[in-house]
Picture 1: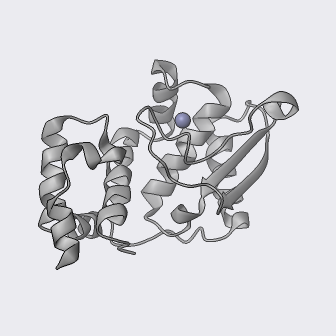
Picture 2 (picture 1 turned 60 degrees about the vertical axis):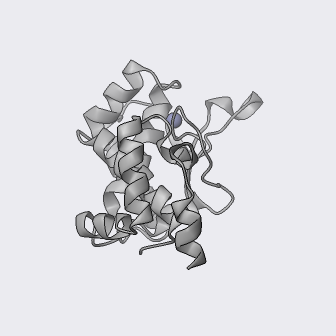
Picture 3 (picture 1 turned 30 degrees about the vertical axis):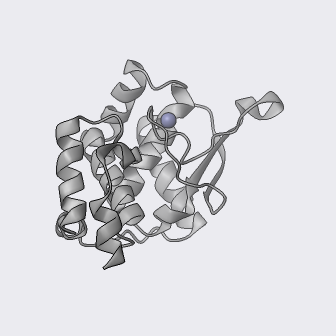
Length: 178
Ligand SMILES: [Zn+2]
């Protein structure tokens, strides 16, 4: 019963993946964690995981999206699942999930690295993260133009981002469901 005890002690500020959402949303999620219904909710909405399980398939998946929406943008040199990327809190967005090439010489080179934990997850979540990182090829900041581009590539972008964050919250407090 120690698990439910620790879960009952959480307060809304502990929901780091949902920090930018309203208190009303956080209270509801907190209740679902306490009653252990969040996992079932997610499984009902997303019963299956994607089949993009290796780097080659990931590359094809990302390039299909890029060729559809960002054909003229600069090329992407590397597309991989990266076990070194840890999913950590960032109230502003998801760019800590996937490190883009930073600093000095590598600046103009685009790489897309997706956290290893998304190798096994529902396809819309992988799609949402891919769209997010592809949008950064053109828009560096999380501004209006950035989110407009995300929604252009994936009309339900915001819904999927929210539910992906619910999934991360589930994994943190209650464990893996897939
Ligand atoms: Zn970002």
